[in-house]
Amino acid sequence: MRKLWIVMLVLLSAALFSCTKESDEISENKKDTTLKNSAGITAGGMEFKVEYNTPRRVYSIDNKDLDNDGDDEIIVLSVDKDEAGDQYMDYYNFDMMQVFTMDSARKNFVKISTDTIDYGEELIYEDLEKNFKYQLLVKTNTGGNDVYASKGMFVYDLKPDNKLEMIKYMELGDPEIKDLNSDGNKEIVVTNSYWGIMPRPDIIYYTSDIYGMEGGELKRKNGEFKKYYDEKIDAARKRYDDEKSRLQKGEKIKPSEYPLYAATVEMFVNYMSAENNPPIAAFWNSEKDFIKKNISEEQYTDLENFVTRITPVVENL
Image (cartoon, rainbow, N blue to C red; front, side, top):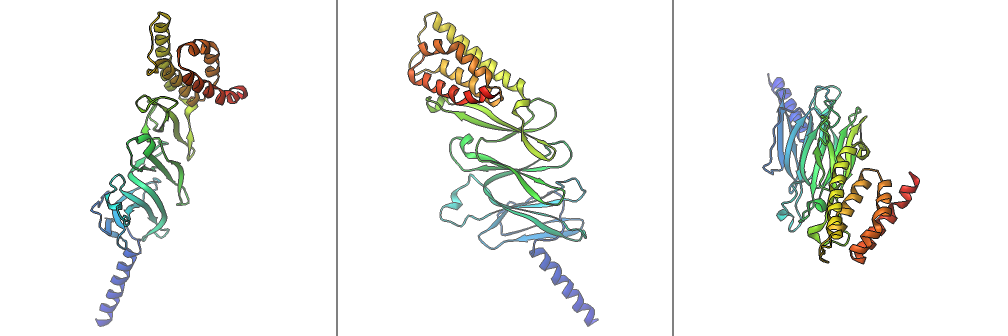
């Protein structure tokens, strides 16, 4: 009986040790955002526990079957705000992500990834390829008043060899997940800005990049969204034509206003993003004389420089 009791103690100690080693089983979706230095999750009657040394704390612990193999992975987000003032930076929530998966013996979990996530704000699971396999989309936020200059995204994909791979990093652009053409597939949409010579309230924002999953890779798909960009180009062209009509009727535009310049810029950046540069040169050759007479020299020079920059691209098409 004494020998049996000793054996049971040894087995219990080994089980506890494996938990602190960050390997065991998981459970139904459950998060612990109490910012403690340890957290656990259970599934199938077994437990998984992770524990960090202070000041690193757990932001969330979650489970998701990322690769549709019938077994969930464990995703742990944590944060270490130990430097002076860090604790007051509430625009980000975590700075590290660890992922665990079932080992080949299906007895416990092993860590397959530890990655630094600077300024992590939110983790989203998204099946971008509609194949029941989920990508990890980690939104980031460096703080600031301009979301397009401060919010970015890491994109991870779990490959067949249980290797978690970062397939894309977007530092800026406030990436969003949208179905732009209503075909059921989700795209990652990135926004950029064109300042030119306009003040901040008049900045032109436009969709600079559209990414979609294809064959396990995240690819730039701008050229496939002609209708999306054409609608924006047509709207900008209408504004340009309206302003041109006003000017031809003798109306005056204040130097502080940018309607003709802004409408032209919006056409240009959307043609460029749509990977359709030739119309830029065609429009410029047709309208540049009128534009030059009706906007400031500074505005005209900026537009001319824009066309000059894309001219080699146009000539090579």
